[in-house]
Amino acid sequence: MDRQVSAQRVRLNREKVLRAAVALADDIGIAPLSMRRLAQELDVVPMALYKHVANKDELLDAMIDVIITEIDPPAAGPDWKDVVRRRILSARSVLLRHQWARQVLETRTNKTPGVLGYMDSFIGIFLDGGFSVDLTHHVMHAIGSRMWGFTQELFDEPAGQDSGPVQALDEATQQAMFQEMATRYPNVLQIAMASAHDEDGVVGQGCDDQFEFEFALDLLLDGIEKLRAQGWTSARAAAVG
Image (tube, rainbow, N blue to C red; front, side, top):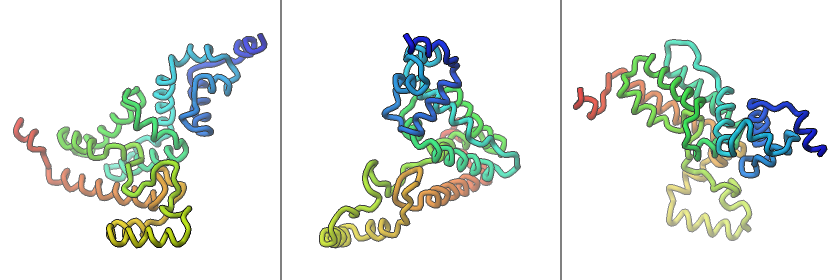
């Protein structure tokens, strides 16, 4: 009875539910998040939530829309590369604050209003920067998940494992592993051991996460600018035209 009275006292709205869900996911991660757990956090009965979100799937979609509002809007300026770069790095900082968001972005297929608006703003940056529709189409494919501030890195460690490949092993076993790697995969070992560890990286432990991301992003943007300056057109678009 006390629980029902409490539910009536707490005035919920959709924004309050979503903000609480984001904060809870920040605290416990996305896997333990449930409608029941969120109801406990808000001190309401679970049924009170269903007036605002139909189920967990809708909740996850809406949570992404919430964090998208934290990404800086496109800056004003004639240099499209600078505008795109700043927006992508802003998105990356948002993922650092909400480390559950990458997993949700990778698994959700529903294009919510927030997601569509974010994509639309990127397309607008390119079109306003003098890109053809054809080049913009291919550029959006090339940028891919970088638009959200992450990529799948080459030397990522599997989730839940230590960043050092042999941290928990004794010295003799470490030496044996290094010797085996040096014999069979010398080039991989040379590059992997050159990695500077970054335990708090948004993409994963291993290399200097932020530097590698910006390095690849700048390479990509420079290449895109060359195509724009050349008036590049895909073979398919040229055939149609």
